[in-house]
Image 1 (cartoon, one colour):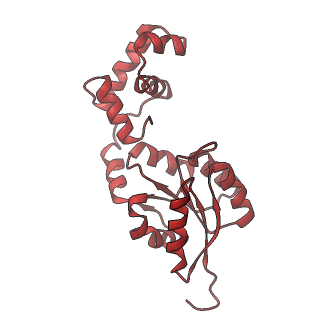
Image 2 (image 1 turned 180 degrees about the vertical axis):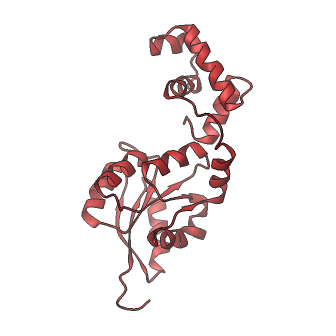
Image 3 (image 1 turned 180 degrees about the horizontal axis):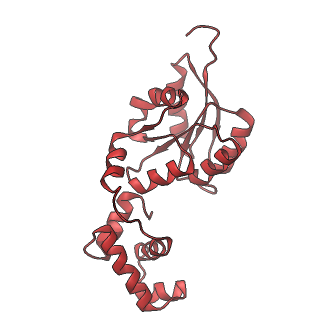
Amino acid sequence: MSRDVSPIRVLAVDDHQLIRAGIATLLLTESDIELVGEATNGGEAIAKFRECRPDVTLMDLQMPETDGFDAIIAIRNEFPEARIIVLTTYTGDAQAIRAIKAGAQAYLLKSLLYKELIQTIRTVHAGRRAIAPAIAAQIAEHSGEESLTPKETEVLRLIAAGNANKQIAAQLSITEETVKSRVKNILSKLGANDRTHAVAIAIKRGIVEL
């Protein structure tokens, strides 16, 4: 790297110290990339971004307090040019689409961190997108399908938590018939055989979390 070129400044956001330490170790070997800050949740990430103004932010999604999705939205609202790479253990298309809509430019599986992180940082810094092939394939597979509505997703979350139709109706202040109607739509949209199958599909795709 020539001396007149500034290194790519990176902010790492993850609630697991081992992941942040691994990222720091990886970046130490690269002369054109510099770790300028760390955060353990979305709220810290927003504050650290304001303080450090990184070129690229590495953002976990599942974190306590403020999660990665809300942090991405907040940062991009305040800094529209922010470049954000999502780091995740989930291959599901629903979470990837949600992250991209929130403003992320890249979606990288943590299992590929040591193999692909450096190149992904350079790609995003250069203004290009980067989506892990496994996730891109998931997005393509479900691209023509009708999405669950927020109300259907709400019912599915309650099913995943072990609630029967009567309990769901009581919690949402709706009739059992309305619950049954939403369950029927959920099964149809997900191509599921039954409620258990629907929950399994939804977890795999990142529509709901246990």
